[in-house]
Image (cartoon, rainbow, N blue to C red):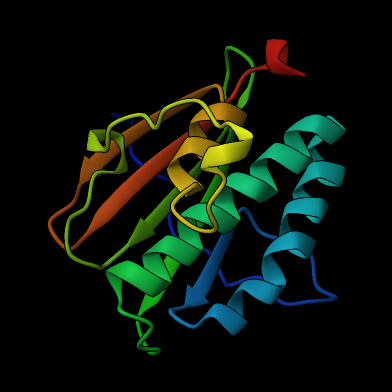
Length: 154
């Protein structure tokens, strides 16, 4: 696995958008996420579909980390990094310091039918459907989820 870029200053509304966003483990902190992704999309030429898909996948991943990994207790950082891949495509890396949890170990849910619609529990299904690739690594202090988008997926 390649090393992540070194940490940069957290995104601040109205400033140049860096390629790393640092969030507190509070759902309210996620309010900066859409603006950050939109700024990346404009700066790096991400297609609208990738921008939409990335926002959805990141919101699912980060909200799961905050609600389940950190138990909704604020005060712990999470990081999201962006990288354009040399071979084409884009990767968003979500890191936290929560207990290890590999979302890819979760079984795929059966197809959705009108009779099986439920609220909640769909985040991993959505990430699998809207990304081109998912990879997980346990880190010494938590979790790293790489969410990839291929140019062919647009």
